[in-house]
Length: 257
Ligand SMILES: Nc1ncnc2c1ncn2[C@@H]1O[C@H](COP(=O)(O)OP(=O)(O)O)[C@@H](O)[C@H]1O
Ligand SMILES: [Mg+2]
Image (cartoon, rainbow, N blue to C red):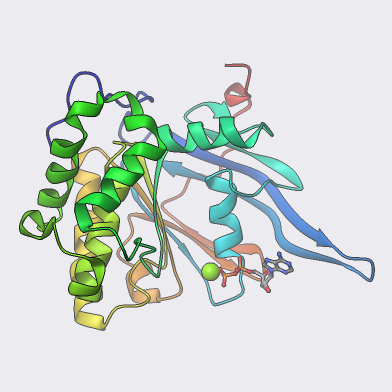
């Protein structure tokens, strides 16, 4: 994809270098009656430009973990270091701005606005992150380039209801690309698609790692997890398996930047 000079990656990306570090992350939920541990001392590193899977059965804590990576939820203890900088507790406005610069998010159920066309859905995403530095007059061309990248250049004026499930998820991927964030985060991105369409959409996501993106995806499907070049397996909030992942806590990465 053509990236204009004004829209640049915020992070310096070196293939294989630690991009996202999760260190001793714990998330508990306390009610009056009891405290439930949803994530228990989770530590792993996501290498830059990897296709990275978080795998585990339903209820193992995958979505909770993703919400920590995007700053939507906060750890009870432990930390997430993103591009060398710790995601600290900060105001929602700051976090939203951070998110708009650093991550593109893809959901299982697409989450397109039904009354907006494919292109308008992407323009709305650009609106929400103020184009991430891209001048407003270039937004429409940017949206069109993102649609072309997912093979839907001809579908810009379609409403979601006039698109198949696979096409809707492609639009959602195009939307996640709009801010040119270095990391794409996807929660069961093919979980609502038939198996053949799921593979096509997955291939599209996987291919983005050859075009400068780090893709972190959650799946309960071991076959899709096996496609990753690095992955962690979660069970009951704990890591029970790691493949291609350096389990290294890096003191030098401690905030302060
Ligand atoms: N806000 C919450 N309050 C209580 N329990 C929760 C909350 N969010 C998640 N859980 C529980 O934590 C566990 C992990 O949930 P989740 O992260 O959604 O798992 P997964 O995405 O792997 O299916 C589940 O048992 C779920 O019921
Ligand atoms: Mg989930």
